[in-house]
Image 1: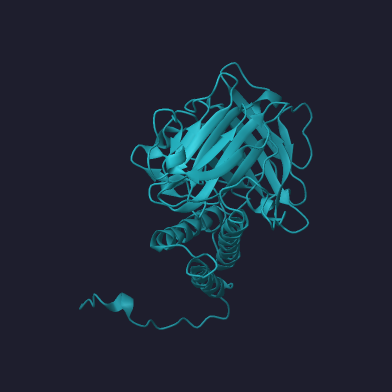
Image 2: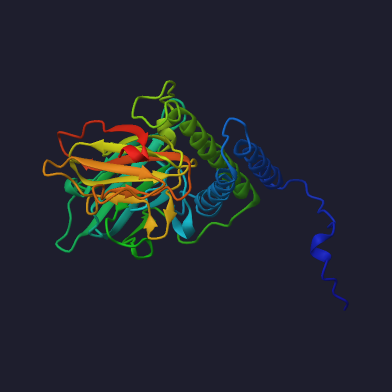
Length: 383
């Protein structure tokens, strides 16, 4: 038998099918979405230089990778499985270099049990997401360890269901629009490859045998993946435009769409402050604020596509364990292309990025909260 090594690249004889479950049409929609989103990266509105465009294409590929795993591979709430959002270097929708995010699909038609052991991280949150009036994500229910019944070694059991089972303390309601369960873990000093996921999820009313993956199922999940990618890129594009006017400032943006908040999977236990830096080689951004009141906090910088900036020495971030503060807890961070003097111990190096995001995140804030920080651009020589 003669083997043609080029056969895979030649036209194949199509099957004559009465129906393919919409699989081929869904795949075409997905590839069309990728082509459309490429035009956003190379648009006049986004601007930027060669580095920005290259990172935009990487961000698009990472959105595709995450969307494929979330929906095409693990998108069945009848057989839930966790996806590690930032695995394999993925950075989507404003990654936190100190965090691990794991999500699983859920449905109010079923009930689930999450079991595991608290990891000893600085902060942890368990969230169920539903849909708001505009279709975006809203918090349907949320718990932190302080509100839960925890065993002597950190072990826990959490029930997700439409109604609370009798005698169960650790429970989150699955309302009619519930679709995702997300666990956030924040580690101050643990490398990303060593951050544990010490919990599992299983469906309490699961059948004995797994489902077969049909063409119709592939079609439905691929449509969800395409929609997720569209939303993720549009949200990243929209936030960059909003924050950049005005740049180098903590003033509210001149135009703001509140619906965009729901795209980023909000949490009632998180506080976010941020802005847009646009710095020449001889300029610096001074970012400063009052004492950080919360279990966990981080100041860090991201590129134009909401991806944390890395360079020699790791991510450009300062958390509560590394941020140098004044006796009253106040702090000052310098973002600049050149290293300032010894009087400025908190330096974030954008590693050649002329523009991007600067952000303060606080998780599990105390009752007093934290006031809005300030930011201003100065000449590097005037520091």
